[in-house]
Image 1: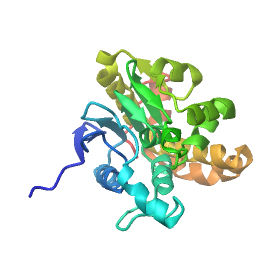
Image 2: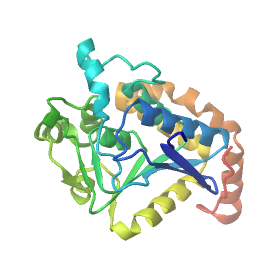
Image 3: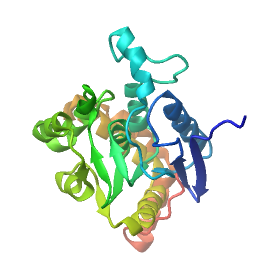
Image 4: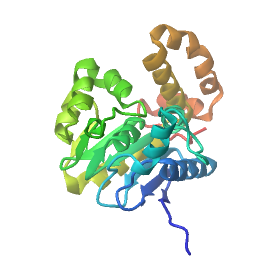
Length: 265
């Protein structure tokens, strides 16, 4: 029997496009998480400079794989990883957030529960205007298990975060753009084009500087500005010997700002 392919990968220049194809609804659990990690690590080995995560099915992700919950109920908590699981859900989100490559989520259809948590772990979220997004775990007697509440609080404040997780509503993309939870809500027929444009812009940037920005943002969001200030010199150190800095400075001297062609190292 042919093994089911859960995530496919396509390279367009320096951008790796990862497409989730875990039928029927890209339910997030150990199988899909491990498949995403494998493709991301493949993109890293190929020196990709930006990654897109999208769905090849009707929906981005309808939530968590419910098959994992029976084991968690038996254990009495949600903190234990299933056998064969490469990372816990929280470890997976940290892996995404600290990855030294920009990641863009391209959302259509429904993006609920664990699917929304996956999107929130990306650096940039583009969603089709017809998309419906939400933390709906309360309908199962749960709350977001992988850190969705915390990440919503960071972006939109405690009041809205509690609204999303306690009322378990589905929100349109334009509303969540206005709240600041996602970056862009775009017409459905523009989703692929806009996503790729953003990813290519990130891929053409100074990759080491982007990695430093991600790391500092992660520290600032989780430990505070003082901790980020204290870590800044060490995090920025690789930039000073990078080819991209040399290219950027030389281009500025010759042509002015915004015309440097970075090489990603």
